[in-house]
Image (cartoon, rainbow, N blue to C red; front, side, top):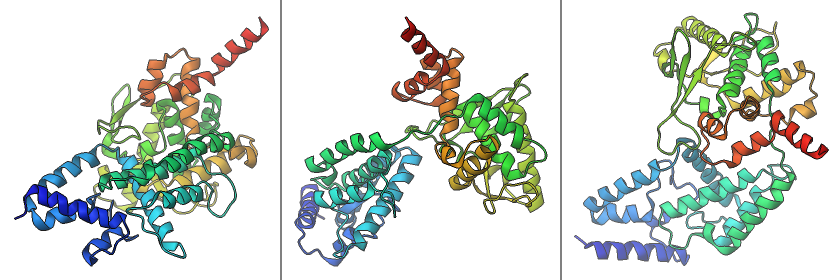
Length: 396
């Protein structure tokens, strides 16, 4: 059996050969292919292959360390990294002279990020988050695979990302926030007995996202077993959030309201509708099914038939289709203006509404799950109370 020093020397020689584009043995070459399952089975890298061959005991300890590295990522972040890495590998394979994604060169990453800065099949600029997420995913995979010279950390790539944060931000529009009146109108139109299950479900999500400052992704893992009904409130446990790196989860408390919008009543009606859909479909193990469901098609208009709720999670494109095409049209908003709204509009509007009601920055951060003041401060600045205060100062 090789010593630890000899094992590390083998691993380093394999990595050096790969970085120098030297021919690799078939068992090693597979690790650099565009379809290598780096994230599908975890980022084990070349080191893992070497250890598994020469020292099973060391390999077990190595994989335990890899497990801790994986656990450090929030579930949503890890899922997004998987998607971005798959895109990068696919792009590398589709080039006239296929490129190696792992280890990639700094030039490969530079050109790919330039490619990602444009929306597919258009000449419109992508969002800043699109580029930064692609960069972060490539950087993470190379770090997890112990590539000694990470191409995502090279000066030319870092300068490009920094420049794109400036140039793309200048062309990017933030999602327009929904006001409390907007949310109440949507609920009044669609969170009613005559609505289809699909309409009611999406109207309920809009309402709860506004009051709980929730992202669309927050609801993706919420199942019926995470909802607890009490006489005076409803407790919804959100098992995973975007920045929940410690897997602690988050709780949203739904309270009744004597006037205007009543989130608790809407949630109770939603639960009854979901139960009826499950009973009709004779589904089993219903407590493990999503609270917000996908459904057939994208048609919501009454009279066209009630799209049956399925057992899968609600799709983002279905939510956006409803919000922009049907709900905004019912509010008298043109389609061009409606495109400025997104699933994030409820969260942004809810934060501004809390600021209008006198909530402190700490209150808003706690409800919305923010760790820094940057994002919630933006919503506070956009609140009606803040705008009126700035307007009063200009008159002095």
